[in-house]
Length: 87
Image 1 (cartoon, rainbow, N blue to C red):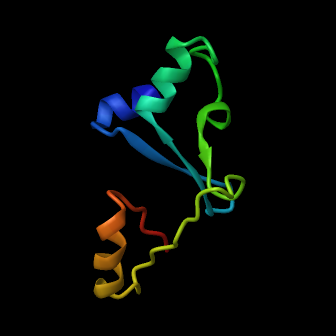
Image 2: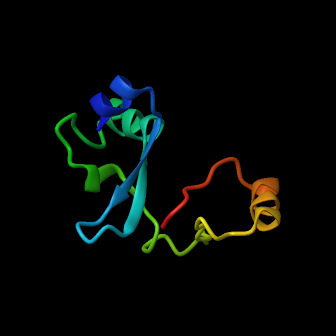
């Protein structure tokens, strides 16, 4: 994942299930932090370092679709710095 991010200039990647459902996100910062602190090794799986949306109930996520009204999206970005658009 780190190589894919580096090659394409990304610092975050969505994690999609085999059925095409958004499962979580992986960030370069958190991945590197886990490796440098020894909590995971560089050959860890994405599932070992990803942030899963469904299992982290302390943080609520809002789904943004192509049909989301722009006013609602504007309100979303008042309190959030990033979002993932789903289909």
